[in-house]
Image (cartoon, rainbow, N blue to C red; front, side, top):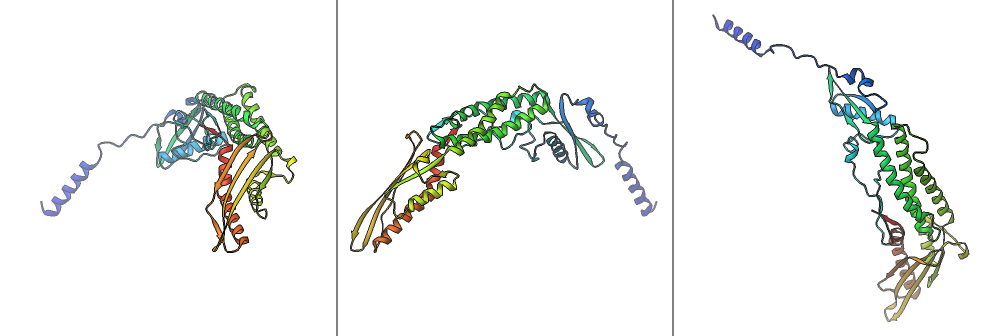
Length: 343
């Protein structure tokens, strides 16, 4: 046997041993792929089959179809593809030194659909299929629990929002209540989608939602400020505070008898005259009074001396410094101190 014949024989033997003993069996389609309704009946499950080039793509496609059922927007990400009992509490509110309320509800940016689970993937050709499903009974239990917890928060917020003695805090609470109400309404809608229940099942939640919007309307229409400034210079402090309040959405009245809240402002500028010029040492205090005359907010600042050769320039520079500080810090402190804290 020559060299070429020997090489050809060895190559043929290598191919023989490299070949599989028998072809891989075709994968059998799972029951849900061929008969989804039999495996996951619609009276017990919300389900959808997703298709993609990978298992992840197939899961995303399936979740997107379930989102269409709930008529919501689903961002396909790890946070969405999780079981409902893995949800975490999110913080929505800023801290306040004034009032504290315990928040027992889970607040999210949207009314998620809960309890998404997945079957093992099934591949055929180059495509992968996955079935996503939600157990209707389990999801309804989660929705109902979320709704009840939100209702507890709404009742506490409305105790402030419907109290006309302090419309500023009431307005903040009403705005928070409306935000939670919008989420709660979506939760109620989803709960009704996964389970057919009596029309009165969520009457408590629906009543609180209606009251929240009514309270917000009342607070907005009723709340009006008047500003009384002692020690102002050419109306600069008054104009600055009025501009800040109006930019924040509050009404400012020219006449005090139209107001339901008053800002009582005291500005002092201790003047010292020296050979170098005129120097001022300024202070400002702002006290917010509710309709019944009780204070609910205070603000104070003490400033370093500011001077100029001419008296008019010294006052102009000093009051400009006071107004700059108001622009930087007044509304932030006012918001923080007049909002309730939800933990």
